[in-house]
Length: 222
Ligand SMILES: C[S@@+](CC[C@H](N)C(=O)[O-])C[C@H]1O[C@@H](n2cnc3c(N)ncnc32)[C@H](O)[C@@H]1O
Image 1 (spheres, rainbow, N blue to C red):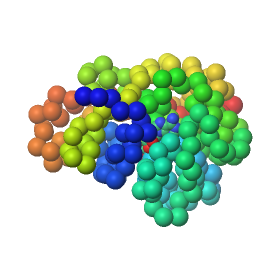
Image 2 (image 1 turned 90 degrees about the vertical axis):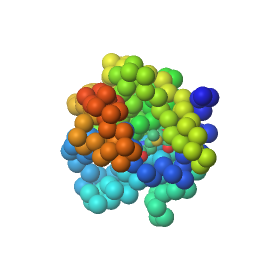
Image 3 (image 1 turned 45 degrees about the vertical axis):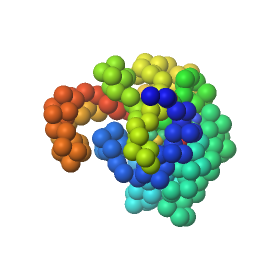
């Protein structure tokens, strides 16, 4: 199987990206459970994809919600009216300290190096603000899992992914002025059993139960 670069992969995945997966469902629940206050805050979602999390965040009473993503085809699938721009996490086109909460969800594993990304995430976050990062868990990669999706022809495609340990995330974040305040490791379990059941793959569920597939880190901007 050829591994696709992120921009090429997500351009192909975009029309079907709205369908939640085991990973996205676990990631959503985990970020919600962090309890980072959004009401009245300015929220930036970096690597927002189809901006579905931004749309959901509007129900929490955010003061401002903006998304950026590398792949214009993903942004084109967003709900009309979202404030969006095409940009790379390593060069975010917004002013310093312009947001109170900055998300970067399931994006950084697509980059070989974390420093430039964390520098930008920290730069755009106001002092005392929160930066929330999630990634495909290194344990999942070690267990042989890859970042894949089915294209329009039903062919399984793999997306380029780089393993970053929790320590590597923490260190790159610290170099950018971010202090870790919370970490989570989300495992395959009851929350996502239905995905396997609907696919008639409960045997796979039993094999994967307890495997960490999503890593999450919440930082405060000093
Ligand atoms: C797994 S999707 C996650 C989308 C969204 N955060 C979510 O949770 O629904 C990864 C997204 O990261 C974007 N992406 C990949 N590399 C990026 C980069 N260097 N800068 C900005 N976005 C990037 C892709 O275009 C894709 O939309």
